[in-house]
Image (tube, rainbow, N blue to C red):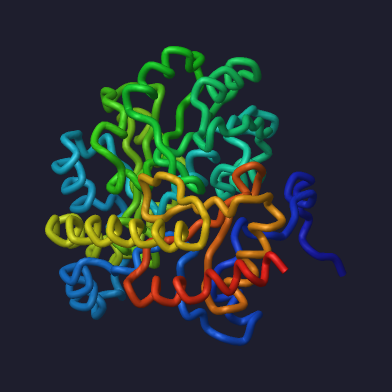
Length: 368
């Protein structure tokens, strides 16, 4: 009796996930976290209109979702000033990343990203046999010039760039990216991850024609709209590229209730404005807590703050482990020199009260 015959590529891959979620960590430690500040979710929650809309839609969950996400795409088109043909709705940015890699990357194709950038993208590239080429961050920012130069060197199909960046919270102006794209090689597509764009300063998103064939943008309802569990993301790009996703995507992958909730969230501008204000206040308090403990918060255009622990990655990892032991879920960058930091999501006052009490204890233990 034999089991399944895996392709050689799949057989070589590790059975692993890019992140160990907080629920798994809670099971391992045998207790719930007191403050969940590691996943960059919105602890301020979704719009009450979205909650009501999803509650009202729950009784009709027997229906498949609209395979074209027609209402949500049209509403997004109106808010962004583009045509619905320039938009694709998918199962969060993670799902869209997988579709894009499947669409473009064959075994052996070169793909460029930054060393220490979002690992789920790398996971998809590895799964389709792409060859990852990485460049270092520069001054805690992803380096567009180095990314595009590497793309030219290796004839990359795809370049990944997050703006604002995760895990550092840094950002480039849109004008900087537009100028850098003069050196993006022909035939290379820039994948611009704008998951945190709602928190960024005006002008962070580059002013490019939506039909520019050199770029595809990805955004989400997981961050500012507080719907991470609903898995709703969207891509913005040239109509021909967006249409090509129909060749390979899961047409009924979008949850019907999630689509309805996202539409209601999109139409609640007041709630979004309130969340942005709450996030700004929370980031200010995280920065103050860090400074009160002799640490340095980095500037952030996201809903988290990277805090420089003032030593190396081993020390920052001890701080993180002590915080987890004390019931505070946080994460940290994986690659030096960024791994000198821990990353703390914007939380509610009660969450940051827990952080304020735990951080000096964790630092003391880490130093011992």
